[in-house]
Image 1: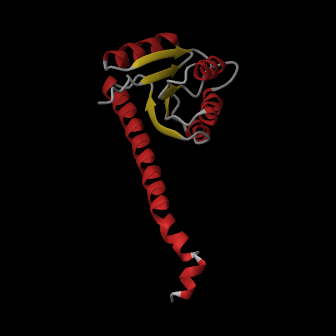
Image 2: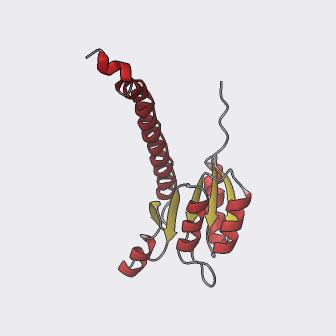
Image 3: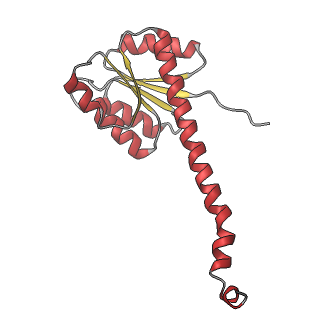
Length: 159
């Protein structure tokens, strides 16, 4: 029997009070939580901890590296689900968020239920993508014997 480890979430928000509140709620739901207050800190934390399963990040982190840039760097290091958490909802803000492969968006100060649902949906999407890749690989591996027999020179003599 395989024992699964607790899923880990990195919350990145310059508003440390909001991040702490989100973290406490998600911890009460069974997640392991890490916090970062800047883009630079988020990237450093992510590089140091290979167990982070999801990143909740505010695209607007103030001076320094923004959340969108941090999320892009994080996903270049290792592809993990990123859920954007922002109070900005204007068209220009949302267009900038399109630069990252986000698995979801939550309006800041939404209900805990909305936050938890967004996290759950992101993990389900990640699982679905993993299963699709495994299925594709399985089909390729299953096709190898057919490809080899087609390329077997003896096969042309038996036609």
